Length: 426
Image (cartoon, rainbow, N blue to C red; front, side, top):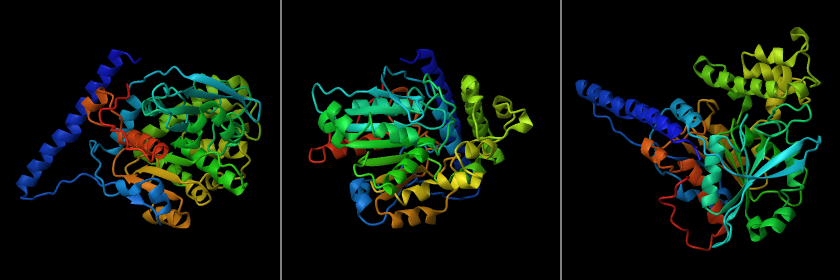
């Protein structure tokens, strides 16, 4: 359980921001409009759906979403992103399952099993967190807690070496590394294994990749399709606030106004290397002669994630150039090959992802009718924050409810959905 002090401090900060951004700005705007005699129409942003044909629209019930208004506070994307990072933590007592990876490094799967004493589980959700995140990162905790209350079994796939998980072989964090997903979905997370463990809940298996985790998941699904895997590992997948074009994201992060996010990401990677320096000092395939072949010395000199990709990520993962690396992890490209329903949730004001042309979404959706996009007008990067009191009361965000509603409705399509009003994360 999070501390009361942490909760109160977040409430105070959130309330101050809310007053300044929403109420104070509205007063200023009204005064300016009055002085200049303008009558400005105020409207909430509209949620936009990009889908071609009925396949993805019907599967994801997108007709119920299209043209809905975004009813949470219309915070700027940067504010939503910062608030997300500052939300209180809610530690979860997971059950850990360990699988031996393809390189013999242990893969840690953290489970929170739904209570099935009064009703059957509504499905299984397998989550791949973002850069430097794991099962105890706040936005992952929130999603898991809500899914648990919906009656969904949750498994968090922790990338090796993150959080309290071990790193025994020299493998860096990378969007291109899918070997561990292939291994776990052929063993502990195979349909056969999940059916033995959870019965009919294994008839409704969903994946959710957050941020960088969505890049990894989409690449994994593309590889499954191209390899002609007979038994699909997932029934559907959700890609949430992911860099759909990594080259554009890299460019965006280099812009001065995004320096804060880039510094934080670099700091996270440096912490990862520092924590596992005894293992990572033996990383091969990279040339750090200018830094005395000292990977930690190089990391501390980093000014951008692009430098990390150029000097470490690309060569470490077998790519001749950083352009080859970015092309290999391009989500738009991966989505063209996916042969299961995939829904991408995008916030149009996400300061991390970058500006993407509208035709890019249309091109993918028209090429692959199994793929659709839901574009929220606000939300930032993994934020989607509600009002201060709603956050204090533990009410889930629109994104969190969207995920859990989709999964639970597919398990019990024939039943009348239970009301979700009043559901509290905590």
